[in-house]
Amino acid sequence: MKLTLVAGLFAGAAATPNLDVWNGKSLVKVDLSDLVTREAFHHLEESAGLDVWGHGRDYAEVMFDDAIADAGFKYEVVTADLHEHFTNFFASEPVCEEGKERCVGSSTSFKDLNTTIDDEYYTQYQRFDTIVAKMDTIEAESDLVEQFTFGKSFEGRDLKGFKVTGSSGFDNGKKVAVYNCGTHAREWIPPAFCVYLVHNLAAEYGSDSTITALLDEFEIHTIPITNPDGYEYSHTSSNMWRKSRKPNEGVRASVGTDLNRNFEYMWGTGGSSSLPTSDSYMGAAPFDNPESRALADYWNSLTNAVVQMDIHAYGGMWMYPMGYKSESNCRTAADKRNCGVESEADFNAHELCGMASKAAVEAVNGYTFDVGPIPYVIYQASGSTCDYAYATSGIRWAYAIEVRGNNFQPPVSNIKLSNAELYEGVKAQLECIASTLILEAAGVSLKLD
Image 1 (cartoon, rainbow, N blue to C red):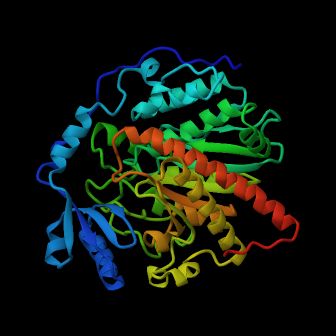
Image 2 (image 1 turned 45 degrees about the horizontal axis):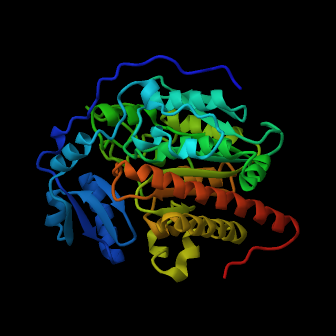
Image 3 (image 1 turned 180 degrees about the vertical axis):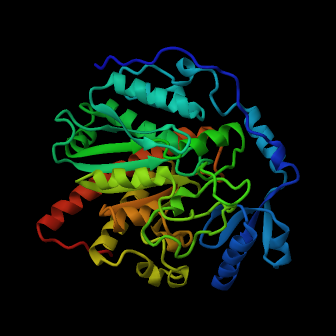
């Protein structure tokens, strides 16, 4: 048992974001059921700086702007009064603000799984300091868990992760699987899973034969918050803030870069914005934000990484490279392979293990994910974590997923549901990867039905 324990309280005053910004604003769903309309919408998104919240193959959910109606797009209202919506949301006290000892939740002895699933930590959204305190508690309670720091954010916060493996320990040639959350600040539900995954794996090791076998073969690394500055800003100032908090040079009052468009591979080749005020701003240059640079350096330092998964919200999507490819090649099921990775073996590996995860997720609560290359499932996105991890870091299985829900901050009842689903999805993913590597070593080529 480790001796580092969490003690003390921090100031518990609530920090509700400024909700006045939502006065007179609404969310609409735009019909993008044909490719011409879809491409026209992307052009408008870039030129008008539209605030797009959600996307599917045939629609976009976007904060209403007169430019949408003026351009003749068909749309329906999803949320007529965003001020009322968010006022009601925060009135339900979804964020724990009562101090570390209360917010961190149960002191878990790891004697049985129920102590983890019922932990009150997973019943509310948590601030950055509480997430770090929870990591400290989990590490203190299990010899299987270690923390690491891989850099600092623009505002000076530590970029922290933690890892778990079997009793044989770390750094002994095991395969490494990396899961990072909190790249987009406003997506509050994924960080809970990056804590939960390590928490539950450590709890089940030695008592669950599947988990024991997986942790004897893999090191599991998670990074709960890859964008801590933006995440904190979303709690204190603007709850729909997406980007980093690094000011953009030469643009008055413009702050932040979409970190998921700031990676070097195929940077700026489509599906990102050159407008510093845009939520999908790609940055002035690849890796001009310390958070994206540190994350890439961390991946590149791993000698045996086989999985990287960037976890986002929302909409139920389990996606893989190549995000930079044009959507025009991805509009029919017959063309699905055209926008994936070029290696047939790697395409088959991504699809096979993605479908294994989909089936495992659906078996928990019946929630269904769409599986496929990023531009096939959602839209073109260059400079992404997913493409860089696969093409540059050499991590064979690279995924970007969008978890359950119909907005970035769904009711907190979704936290446990999402955690349970993704936990089974990750287990199925790792089992699929382990089996695939065994078959390939024996000379058996993967084939899709």
